[in-house]
Every structure is written in C-alpha cells, then in structure tokens.
Length: 182
Image (cartoon, rainbow, N blue to C red):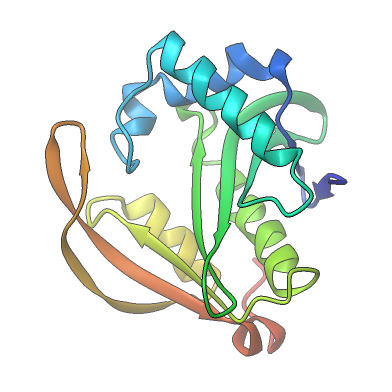
C-alpha cells in the first residue's frame, strides 16, 4: 500500500531491513509494559516482523500493521495496527518508541489510520482497548474524540499477569463530523 503521510509522520508497510528499529520498540520493557504482548526477544521479534511482512503482501490483508516513521527520517519509531473484524469494525493499537514519547507521533499516526479506516476501508466503528494506567494512550483517544464504553476486567494476559482494559470507540459519522484536530 502507498504510505499515509501527515503532520511530521508517515505510515508505511514494514520491510525486512526495519528489524533493528522494530526490535528497539517491541524489545523495550518501557513500551511493552503498556501492550497486550510481552517484551520480545530478538528471535520472537524477527518471527513477528516476518509475519507482518508476509501478511502485508496478501491482496485481502487480514490487518494493517504499519511502521510509524518521521517524515524527515525513514527509520521506524513505532507501529500502528488496524485489525478489521466483523460488522465493518476494527481494533486499533499502536506503540511508539520510548525515546520518541511526548511529540504527538501516536496522535498523528492514529489520525492517519482513522482517515484510512473511515475513508478507503469504509469501516463503521473502530475500537481501542487501553490499560487503565496508560494515561498517555488514554489522552490520545480522548484527543481524537473516542467515546469511553467500559472497563473490561482481566481482558488480556501479558507480562505474566492478567490486565484490565478500558474500551473506547469511534464511529464513522463521528469522525466525519470533525473531531478536534490539535
């Protein structure tokens, strides 16, 4: 797919040569502490990246796991995933390298992915499940006008423990009506 570009950020398909940067994100406890998966080893990260690349080659791809890069540098600083499901819905997830936190990259990446979800993919609903302690990620979905739907108890098993999630959603007509664009 063609890259999606926005305010200082580009979303593109992953490439094999992205491994070191990808591993710097998924192999970092500071990042994965907030994720629904545990910190990857180099071996598990390589297997995961190979799977991402393989899935992206499908004509009817099962998900859109894209690399987040800065416009001025093609190196991977994070990832964003849109996983379409049933009833024209999808789940959104994202992670940004701890060295790049606080610059608005997650918000911009989500905005680009939501434009894609509600535009070319013609989805009706996008959800995000976020750990209750992840204030930065909750701020991202708040900025993008997601609605809080509820608290999911023991929703994911990650880092050797059950973790709750807070569920947020955004509908196509809400996105079309124009959410805040800080």
